[in-house]
Every structure is written in structure tokens, then in C-alpha cells.
Image (tube, rainbow, N blue to C red):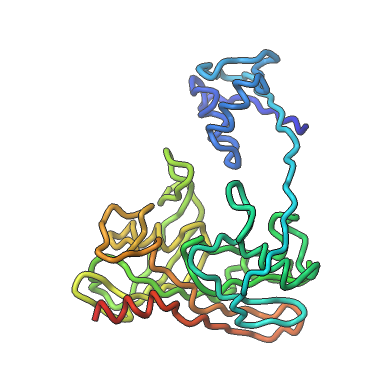
Length: 302
């Protein structure tokens, strides 16, 4: 078991212990922290405490995390729409509804299950056995281009490009409302939602997030747009467009607006992915064609 210790500072005085720990440790959910407290895995000044305990300045909080046991992930013969492939990388066109990598509740039918069948052992291991080859992600209901690395050298190169924001990513989306300006930029930091930890939000304490958008076509109640990411925060386009009053059509998480169309999640497609090849140094740009549902929706809106 891994043991962690930290001391309460003055600005955290009188916070509930579970809230305090969730603020300090972003990787742990509040419900999981409450479970640890109930199991007496959390101590304050050497003694177990109740969940209602309010911390005091200079309290020493200690807790133990049990070692995670990762389930074995099976290769599954799931068809892949391959846009580009060589001995170092593979770019796939992810379909709607497919989860990228296994997690609680999704240990089969993921992109990783399909990649293990297609690539065998030829996937980078930097992100562990649950996410072999995965260097970036797109949401389950977002379609389009996703780059996977077959070895650790390729993984490190692509990860560096992502960190330096040098990978070109352009998305196609349909948002609610009619945008007036032909193009614009949303420059607002994004962090975890203050009350719903499953969501992201514009947050002054969050990380830099910049989205550039331009209008492709206007409809009566909606706008077809292209978004270019300068940064790659979780749910970035969805959060940014909602923040300016134009949430994505079909997005039940970041929009309260109803849709007259039968949609499975947000209308968002990772159309273009441009990067420097990790082995050759050549710039490669791959495009994923719009999925049928998206093309059909554009025809309906005309």
C-alpha cells in the first residue's frame, strides 16, 4: 500500500476533511475519499476520524491507498477504420460510441481491445497495460482521427509535440444558435467543475485553454463550425462553446437546450490531425471523413 502525508495550511482551516482532501488531490474523487475515511484508512494526527471532521491548521493528515489491481485486457476482433499506418504509428477513425481505453464499466469493446487484436504486442507501454499505445484521447461520442503509438520512442515524440502544442487538430461541429462573427477565439482556462467532478468548466484556477473557431455554414437555428485547438484540455471545445452561449448540438452534459434530432451525444468530429512523424521527421496530415450521421444532419439542416 502507498502512504501519503500532508500538513493542513491556514487557508484550509475548518474545511471538511473529505472536501479538503479532494481539493489537494485532484486524482481522487470525493466519494472515494469518503470510502477511505469510512474504512479508517485516513488519520489526522495519528488517529482515525469521521467524515464530518473539520481540519485545523497544522493537522497532519495521512492515508493509505491500496495497490490497484488492473484486470487483464483481452484482444477483440473489432474492425478498425485505419487512416494511416506504418511500423511506428497508426491513425484510426474512431466511431461514435466507442470508448478509447478500458476503465471501470468498460473493459471490452474499446479501441484498445481492437488495437490489441490488430497490432498484437506492437504498442507502446508508457501508459501501462490499460492504455497501451494511447497518447491522446477523444470522448466516447466524438468521432474521428486518433493517433496511436506502436513503440515507446514514437510515444515520447508525439507526447512532446502534444505538450508543445505543435500538433494540428481541427474539429468539425454543429452548435446551437447562429454565430455572427465569421471567426473567433475562446481563450478561457479550463479546470475541474467545482461541484461536479465528472465535468470540466471555465475556471480561473484551471489550465490555459485556447480554441479558435470559424464558420463553415449558417442555418436557421444552428451553425456548422470548424474548431482548431491550440491546447488540448478535456472537453475543451464542448466547454468553450458552451461558455460563449453556443453549446454543441446533442451535448447533454454541457447544454440544457433540447434537440429535435435523435442524436447519441455531441455533434463533434476530429476531422484533421497533423503531426511530425516520430521516426522520419516528415510532416503528416490525416483527414477523417465525416461520419454518415453528421453528413445526413447537414443535409437535413439545409
